[in-house]
Image 1 (tube, helix red, strand yellow):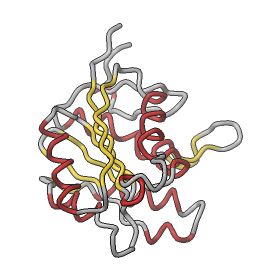
Image 2 (cartoon, rainbow, N blue to C red):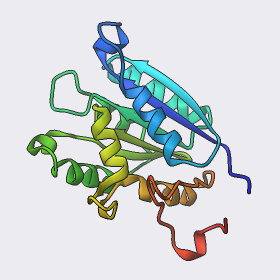
Image 3 (tube, one colour):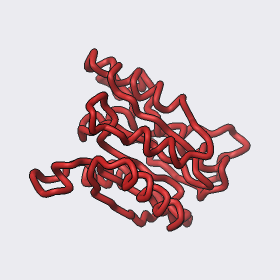
Length: 194
């Protein structure tokens, strides 16, 4: 069986990491999780940029124009003065997808009460879904994958379960997931036989 090739944009937004003050952990975390979760051959388009709204918006547009069907950002979603990733993302949106941000905060609230301070958003631009994820690698995995009990049974669904079908609906490639990492949900009529 052959899987559709997918192009995924990954963007880490950090003043300090982009200027070399410390090593960026966001891009490796995004790449590692996506490589485990998807069966598709993936081309990653990576960007490490400072917390500058115009630069973030420009990077998002560039990645969509380069053919990415999914763009994941990490960092810059809190209430601090320099946190402008949601504003930059909304500025390039054709449609807002509020359920993703709501679910990310719901998942994170199981771990920290400060999850209510996060402002992650999700939008569609052309045929691309853009998701703002948390800044910490552990939180990235938790929000994408969801919460499982000790036996591996899903307690709270992660946001990635809805991503493949969303991309189907906007005309993107067919994302095949490794069910042991994150089972994609599609209506029966939209499932391709394996």
